[in-house]
Length: 601
Image 1 (cartoon, rainbow, N blue to C red):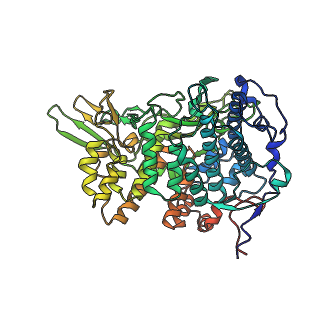
Image 2: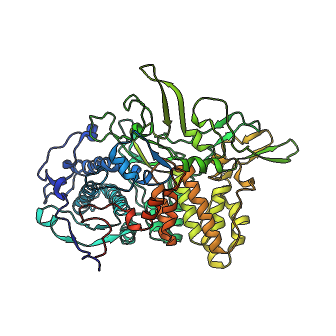
Image 3: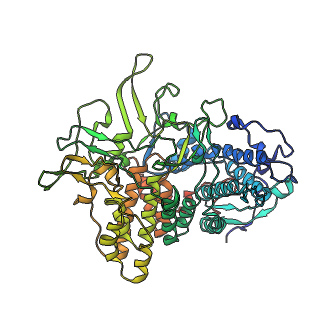
């Protein structure tokens, strides 16, 4: 028998974020990153009906998001199969990797999530969204939308990590309220609630406070259509998820706008296999533009003494701060997956004849460092370097690792390529595996849809669904090999390619990267496997891997899908870990018996 699903929050220090309920003084916007969370909460009868209170409240929630920023990346990556620990990994992070996370582990602190949620609940309950200006515009509607997005995303992170969580959608302002019993929600209940909550706001605008400390504040908020895509994907509403992702793509830069995948890729310059070009994927660009890769980030502090300082740079990179001893390294499983890809090179002569070649396997270049191996996909070697002849300040030779995805003090959460791959995942499970495959292999525009996707639609309803995706040929122009160069065309209008081509060459011409055959179900499973592999190649180290494996495992009802991969992270199967993860209740954290998957009695 399950324990009573109504669990008390009395042991959760919920009112930690209410210590300054009567605080009325606020710091200036200029130094909001130094603000503590108490600035978000005001007296219980004080409506948020002026610009100062409202804006500072939004900024205060952003401040609290900093507390879970690193955790979002680390819990999603260290429990997966793409990174491994070292002799220098600190105990709490090692425990995350071994699924031995107790209540004293610094990454197991649900109060940080509930502090954000409670601040959001207070704002939502008290902000006056009816106020209008002299242009008849609702003054605080943008802030209201932003805070609803913060709350939905935080609840999603909470339930992904704990499996079943007390659900509260009203502010808790007293000790008595914190001791009430609250219903438990699982992942689908959370998703369904927030799908209904956010959908009426999907077309509303988000705030923009200009540039703050050199950062464009438009990157601080979760786009609502993107969140709806995420929620519907986890809720297994696949058609709706695909449409939500597409809606964000087509409206990000205005009505019927363009947001193409871009032309960034790492390529062999020619078939001599001596020089790699490109590789500027925009991982660390933090400016806002129509073509920016970055969609959303959580801003962090610049020095350790300033509140929430991200530790990611010093976990993934050799620095003087960690005495060049990193705590996380690429796993054997990631290196093997990357090397196993067949890189496809295309030469086209002046007569237009195409010559397709494949990079040699076990391709070792002359050079320093372990990762002089350039076999397979080039994205790993583009972002990861390991110099085994580095000289430290003491004159000693030490290993020096750099993972270039972590150069910033800010934590990146969503980016463009992630959006496209999630859309492919949703389309595949909605029953359109060819559509999903084309996103991986060649990229899509209306010509591809018309000639290569619609012919596989079996009925009028399927065709009508696919035709909702409008990628105009003049706006989404496929990148193709050219006769003048073995590299892609450099024309500024060429902006669409297959995601796999970002590291594995011309995937549309690759005989080893074909659309799977078989029944629809067999095709969906095979394309989904390709998507999972693509997620590893593209998003390694970025915190998505464990959740991607979890989502597919839950969808298929196959716990071993996750368990077998995680158990192979070192290249040798950990039989004990694989057996442990066969029980999906072990995928989640627990906290003092109050939060997490409940045990059977």
